[in-house]
Image (spheres, rainbow, N blue to C red):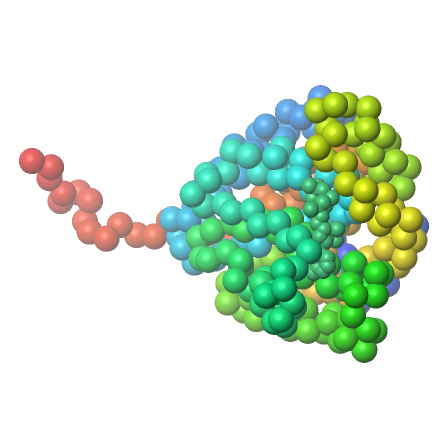
Amino acid sequence: MSIRDTYIISPHQSVNLDDFDPDYSDPSVTKKDAQKQLEANRDRMLELGYLLFAENKHALLIILQAMDAGGKDSTVRRVLTGLNPDGCRVTSFKVPSEEELDHDFLWRIHREVPRRGEIGVFNRSHYEDVLIARVRKLVPESVWSKRYEQINMFEQILAENNVAILKFFLNISKEEQKQRFQARLEMPEKHWKVRPEDFEERKHWDKYMRAYEDVLSTCSTEWAPWFVIPANKKWYRNVIVSEIIIETLESLNMQFPPPPCDISKVTIT
Ligand code: ATP
Ligand code: MG
């Protein structure tokens, strides 16, 4: 079975996060093996990113969602470094501005979707509109409950227009989050990361888990699958995410476009 198939959520699968161990790693893979594999995968991703750019037919959209301290930023840094910065763009979605709130919730998202040839990474995404918006009651249920279907339709439009979509839920445990917050408090160079709001969100952990379960059960589709990545071990998370990106890019069967002229007849004077 491919790595992709191991971590994918099938369409209509009913997800209970208690069944997913955030601490899991394949017992046959050591940390050292995984780090070596990640290096090789980065090289392969660079080649595939170049081909994606040259062919100019598909885009790849990678969506990262996690609880605070779940490792979104470090996944970007560790897995996606090495990609040609010309062809890869990361967008972080924060609390919406007044202007953004005056539009439909997908307005700010659609504008950042990668163009053909490009890889786009969303650090948080439109899923916040059915996660924090639901848990913190930012909009009534009558509004957020319709969004799952709206999101599926939106993503279908993107997929039908050659945007390959991968959605990763970086699954850490509540205990792991506590340890990572603790580390931030203990290390002066991490103090800039401390946000009192994060400790506030943590109090709603169980509600977030229910909200994530609904996202995973409702919005994993053939055209835009969700993957639940065991994320307590950063080295395992990184190698699995990189493998899934590679498998996906390889499945696009990309080709370099033919040269625009007969190369054998070109003379350089
Ligand atoms: P970091 O790892 O740097 O903490 P972050 O993604 O947590 O990254 P923050 O600036 O700490 O960034 O927090 C962004 C906040 O914006 C999060 O609490 C998130 O839930 C919130 N947010 C994002 N999108 C929305 C939205 N559509 N509605 C309400 N809140 C949102
Ligand atoms: Mg944060």
